[in-house]
Length: 358
Length: 253
Ligand SMILES: Nc1ncnc2c1ncn2[C@@H]1O[C@H](COP(=O)(O)OP(=O)(O)OP(=O)(O)O)[C@@H](O)[C@H]1O
Ligand SMILES: [Mg+2]
Image (cartoon, rainbow over all chains, first blue to last red; front, top):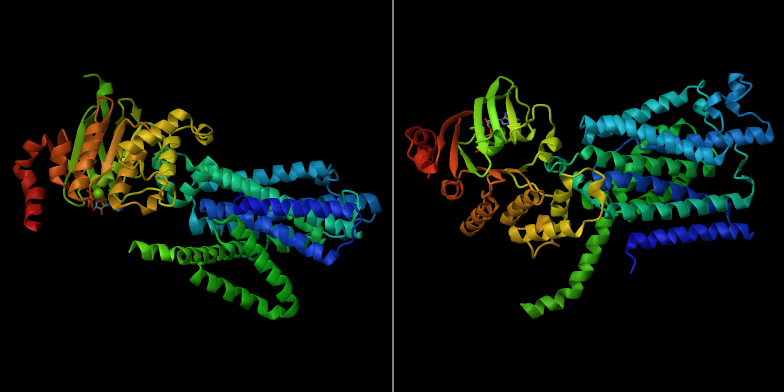
């Protein structure tokens, strides 16, 4: 029998593939619903990426929005360039700056394959350089979390500048099409949602394989007692770096899936709040449980979608109460709750047994 | 005696924390084939000596040479461990969330290059883990979470994690602390089995009986300096040792 992570991975993948097929068979779906599910799938992937390093390797990042934004901004550049070439309407920031053409670093980004390549290269470079220097200098725990947060904040300040060619504080929008599918078509939302779900499924499966592999065992050992591992002769820098880079790439893919679905990116994806929210999803869902992290992202961002519509001013308080409640009663999030529940069930079942023995 | 008989050679070692000097111009030698005891009152610097040997604590001056040719002045903990120094800590330190098997597996892979360490286990490595588990008396608990083991078993597991990696030098900080008589006997037997011409074992202990049973010779550390060195028999009757350590001990008892 498949274990639960694998089961969910297959379900996500199949559901995603079915949606893509359905859209090509001309089945109409609710654009609103597809957008909602697709965005939550992207958030789930983001939560998964943080859980991989925080839940399994003990490294808390409060700046994972940085990698999400790398994916998001690069796909926005792709979409902006495609729109400019197809429709001839220049993006707002070009008009604003009085530019005749896009800056040189937009070269080639209209190609989707090149986009994927460049997302990979940029994410890997940033995560590798940052990770290597932090892990080598043995910055850990709270200090590491603060540095990640400072970095995402710096990136936000940079992106707020209007002369960078990334849209400044208004961000980038006005996308027209993605792999030839017009954003006005109903099909597009369905396809994007399907792809997001399928990618989430594949990533979940990959993460499951990773944490069960010898490398995953080393990650858990780092989380438990990093210095013990060093005294056994193991250079922990490399395990942490590998986990960190994989996590960063997953976060970037999440950003890449998210931005076409919301149709805009602006520097607020780099705000410290968003990065903290990712940690909240994982904490609520359950650190160290892959499904838990996804569950946390679904529940919290689902609630956010609903409640910010109904009672926008109450949302921060509801979130705060949820976080405090979870931290006090279920230190490992909902997955703890599930464990408590199932072990109660088990002890009920085995209770007669014990009577016989005594 | 060639210089390669020397497992650990320490000369003129000084360790201080700020103005507080913990090891003072210490020179010390451990040869292969021997089991060396290190005793001394609390705060004498026994653990600090092991800290300096394993790269946990920086030393200000002096040299530490491992296996006759490796000066570890600039090496970090993993690099020193890969020279064959395995250390058991005073406070048992194992990966409590991992199974006994996984603990041994991690220890076995740790000394290898990173790429080698993520392959599947070879049958030979599998066998090595099983043999070690038998040696430390934990072959029935391989699947158990290490955190659920009894205190004594945790100590054995930690020793097992060192042996599975084929160390040249074992540094054991209080290996029988918190063990009952039977467990102490088993631990002594284990150390006896590990003893051999290719292996040097350092035992830091407060249990005199145990030190006398397993150690060939003993170093008495006091106030960061070596007070006396020699076979336990001679050390026991040394007046200085009785004054600073043994005497005080029996007063307490
Ligand atoms: N990191 C440190 N910073 C400051 N002082 C330290 C540090 N480590 C050890 N010391 C001091 O060095 C002295 C020697 O400590 P050490 O732990 O080596 O003693 P020990 O011989 O192992 O004692 P015990 O038998 O209690 O384990 C103690 O006075 C201790 O307070
Ligand atoms: Mg000590």
